[in-house]
Image (tube, rainbow, N blue to C red; front, top):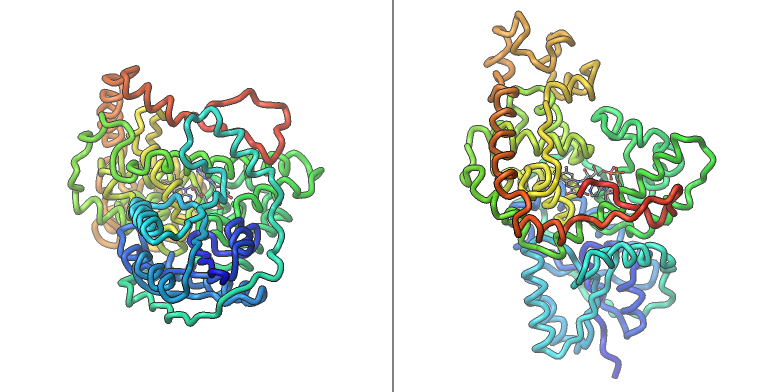
Length: 496
Ligand SMILES: Cc1cc2nc3c(=O)[nH]c(=O)nc-3n(C[C@H](O)[C@H](O)[C@H](O)COP(=O)(O)OP(=O)(O)OC[C@H]3O[C@@H](n4cnc5c(N)ncnc54)[C@H](O)[C@@H]3O)c2cc1C
């Protein structure tokens, strides 16, 4: 008798370029399974906007599987309990999924699944779906492995897979999972939305990418916006890399620069995710232990609340935060600034602020998020320390104040010259502490104090054994740049 195979969908909610589906189809009749795990959704980095995006994706996955003659089975509960119930009822011998570089919770869950599979004689086939290499021995070999994965052909649709038609549980409502989170301008999930974002970027929107990506105003259109689709897997990274490489050329220098830059960022994605894969604990502890005691472990509640709500009294910071809360997305530079202001000016520990941003991002991806959070907080012991001046950022990135006023309408009457520092406005008295808060810190003085403290720690540990270990484990090995690198093997160009 042929045993059925559980195909466990995780962060890979598509049927295209899906190594696990292709593999499962060869093993036997498939049970295409998605498990809604209430404990995962109770974690401090989970949010309603992410769950709403997931629900869109499951709907689209259900349709795409149906077109292949398969029925998606959704079950709610603990993964081991769900898998065991299916094994016992259906005589399952194989479990197939993609490798997941998730948060510490999913890491622990996967260890429990490993133990369960071993105890029950179920063979778990975990397959890579990105450039992240499991059990990587040395960073030196990483770039080649990643390039090989990205160059391999995109897998075609699976032909004639056989499946078992089992009943599903109802999808829980967000409020039943404790996920109350309004995000009126959230991106829509599902394969169709992912493909539309990618193709419109590669046909037209990408033209201004390189020029406009840092602007909070224009970046929303100029950036690809595929991040939540990569996070939930409605697009595979390889599809994005190869579609980018195949995008029409000959459209002038702006286009070529933009496409190179896009490829580099897709490579950064794998580079950062590899860090969390190698050291999952960096979600909880400073990459360099010397920075553990730098900031108070218990965050100043008033500062944390003000920053989280976009009420710090620093207009550009607040506008970025409010925009993020309403849309679920922010461009890279503004994410960096929000994080840096929290960590330096407000001197808040990244473990109290990181989850706030994680929840606000529809595209939350632990493998990018935690390394970035630590980089922007100066706790890696190796990256450049960047302390953004929020007033200057506002003037540079939003010179006419359109973005700031859109999200802070209470500042509409403040003239341009004072918009980013309303405390200097001669009429500040009728505004500050009333319609809009006075600044929670003096941005210049707070930055100076933070710089001194962080640099003192950096100097004390320069060249010590721990710093050397971190650099050797996490720094990218830059290879000489070719004049025209192949798009599919873009080099990393971060100072890591
Ligand atoms: C503190 C902080 C937290 C972040 N958390 C996340 C997160 O949880 N999820 C997430 O997807 N991105 C995160 N980023 C990285 C980056 O800001 C987003 O990937 C990007 O803004 C998403 O928009 P896009 O898809 O239009 O990006 P594009 O600029 O069009 O880039 C294409 C893709 O490349 C990848 N990418 C882009 N920039 C980076 C980067 N700096 N590092 C690694 N990969 C990158 C993403 O997968 C992105 O979708 C974070 C950045 C910072 C500073």
